[in-house]
Image 1 (cartoon, rainbow, N blue to C red):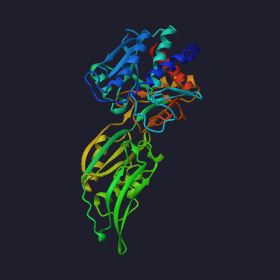
Image 2 (cartoon, rainbow, N blue to C red):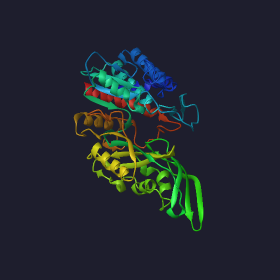
Image 3 (cartoon, helix red, strand yellow):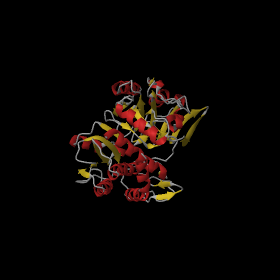
Image 4 (cartoon, one colour):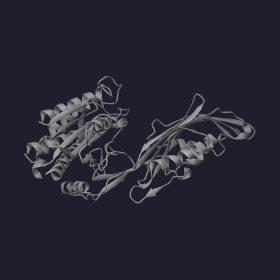
Length: 440
């Protein structure tokens, strides 16, 4: 609808100003306080958004600073648009202050610009467009703003314990056209007592290792020290193995520094080390050597990343990030990988995850979103499967609708995160048209 597009374009400055206010709040999870379950900054971002929604004439509610909502009308909501206002830490490498919105060459730079503050602003202005253009809705619409998506979505779990979600839910926390399939996820932490005992006749002994920083990333660096018998002498070696970091859901885009280290030697003295080298050979990303390697026609090939390995206080500990296809269960994957680790001497410290998520691409809800995408963008609407997880991963029937367009690179979770101004406006246009299509 041209009227929606024209309205959204006329509100560019307002949208940018609201996004600037939100970006200025470093809404990284902080220490919990009474009344502030994730610290004060996420709650401050929620307050700003709810005030803007209230000023726009919507019915707002703050659910104990876990999440908030804005309803279009008194009608029971049948559609929810779910976005989050918390962000990951800024990190190093920014060109300018990550918490000051900067516009340059048609882009808006700042932490949260694409994930998820920009899309949240777009959702609000989509609903404002419908209201101010006087488009009558037969079904209620609710915007939900969370504050803990980046650290486990405890916000959403709490909200769902207090309020019922509408039957249709989409989130602008992924990619266009529509993400309807998300692989299951399992994160395994393991450890064992480890006392290096060098004997020149017994091969190479690992005496120090520190690889990886977070479980959900391919490690780009691994510091090490080992001692090895060599001819008639002893070689002591230490240094750093460099790899290429990548998200754990796309390990083929990186090079694992930990497995690269393990693959440097074939004479590790300890079965704790040699066993890991065999279970996770360098260059393999599907977990085949530890009994996994599953794939299906819908979600594709699974991934398994040995993402952490550290030696401290007499223990060797590590972690694995696994993304498995929709035709496998969490219990099945957990049993296989934990069995392999215990067989070589490790104790499983924790092994938690979620089942795969799949929403029928032929459902009227999904087909309506695909139709809107095609009409507004002129591009093909299709469903896609991912290895990562969006905000709707544990919501039955939920899908991701945006906010990144095909081919875009917005540096999500990285320095100089940004969103194109045109993409911010197009997000609002798409969501407004989706609201009209689904609720009139």
